[in-house]
Length: 377
Image 1 (tube, rainbow, N blue to C red):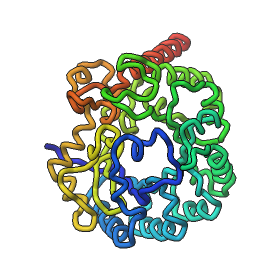
Image 2 (tube, rainbow, N blue to C red):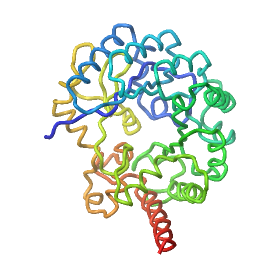
Image 3 (cartoon, rainbow, N blue to C red):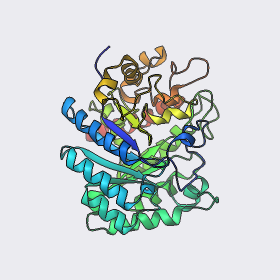
């Protein structure tokens, strides 16, 4: 089995969240592993993380990125965040990417100063206008969070280091929403890029408002976003669309779940345990856990990577389904996220539950490319 590599180390620095988003795969899709995790990474675990990342830097030729995640990572507080980022920035190479994914509620000016000091890219979760965002992204009293998130976006865009700080916004698709309203609202934030994610689900437990594995609610919604995007004379960057179009034109993709580029990710929980991509939680309980109990407190990441169980996990990003392998669109679609391929009958040996959606979206892209080529000719 070929050697694997790590592209992204996702640090679960906080296992709890100050929001209670109803679609969250961590808390609302059947896996309750978070209940047994420490609320925050301890000093010992953070020291072990830094040690293991230094080793990884020395042992792996390819660079990697570190993403602080949760729960809500800013719940670790400004002082702890400053200390951890300072150690990471001091210990790793300058080209190592440091990023944070946040709901924005705790993104104060002081917190932004800390993130700017350590050259951390900030991505904020925002699903669209208030009617879309507050439908699902609620607090623990079922109150909306849109106003506080917009305040955070205003603060980061006004920061002196905004260009370096603000990576963009991350939006989860609601196929019942108006794509025009969502596109308009997200563009109005001034975010340099927008990422869209399909709702988590699989072939046994269908994603929200998807009628069947053959229906195209998500593909139709994204096709409308594509039309708005390509007709816009001054669009923001939409990375998933750019990646797919680049692949259609013969280029290389860089996003997980798109194209057939290998993408190596490990998750380090607050107790120091090393896990698979945690989106696998959305399939069945413990799906993100290795049978081998690895921890940064005792294991080098290079030793984990050389284990056949990790290599099998790494290879599993490529689809195993015969349907996918024979599909002419595989180089574009990539088989989708592994979590979206799962079924109770065949486990991960299926096309993604969004197969029909992706075919529709790719077909719309091909129409745009064909029209453009004809216009040039």
